[in-house]
Length: 123
Image (cartoon, rainbow, N blue to C red; front, side):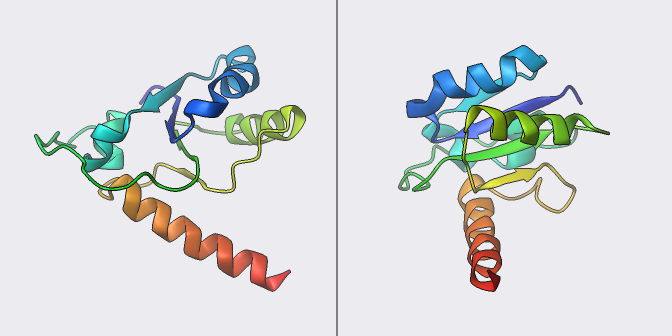
């Protein structure tokens, strides 16, 4: 799979996404809310994931979310370091995995919210 980043609810910070990732040759794909009925794997273009005809009619996620697809080796660290350098703060981010590729964006967001709450409660 070709390396790219799925961006959910990031319309207002699109220029900062470009500033952060374009110099590192990291492609960002803004996912329109209508496509939130698709699985993360389908949106990422993962093999074996089938597109549905369903159109998402639910609410927006509430906060921006990024999903890193096809990142290997040190590239994930490079992306995170780039985010720190440009001040791009998005607490809800994940890598595409075999476990989450069948989830829809709202399901992944809910899981990331739980993890974020648990991690910040420990501090």
